[in-house]
Length: 115
Image (cartoon, rainbow, N blue to C red; front, side, top):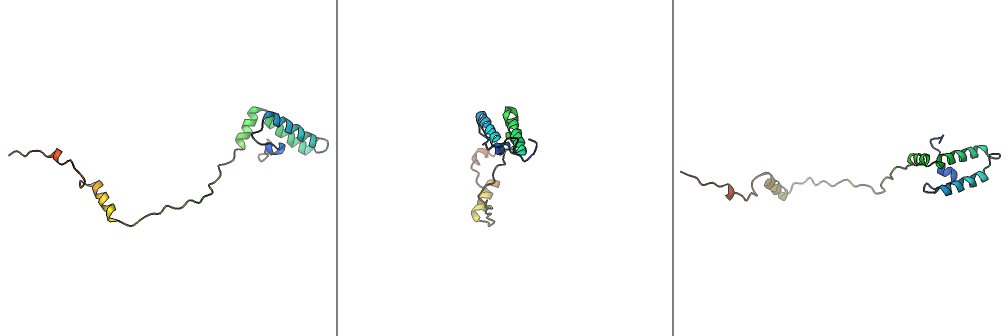
């Protein structure tokens, strides 16, 4: 591909998923429609596109160069709603987690006091 913006599939009028037979058929159709005697510039573009896509290794490279970026999501993301208010239930949950208020294993740690 001599031009970075040239898409050989568009030049030949093909989809990227077309087979080798379809590629060859489209090439000959384009050559018949644009012979080198009448339209030499278009013929050069058609020939260059066919040369790029004819070899499977080159075709793979062209396909990798033509990968389209992932489309942006159509939905707008909503900003998260932050609840900045302090509720009594939240305070009690925090106290239970950070202190011994909810502890139930006091008997296991109780030792007899000897005098």
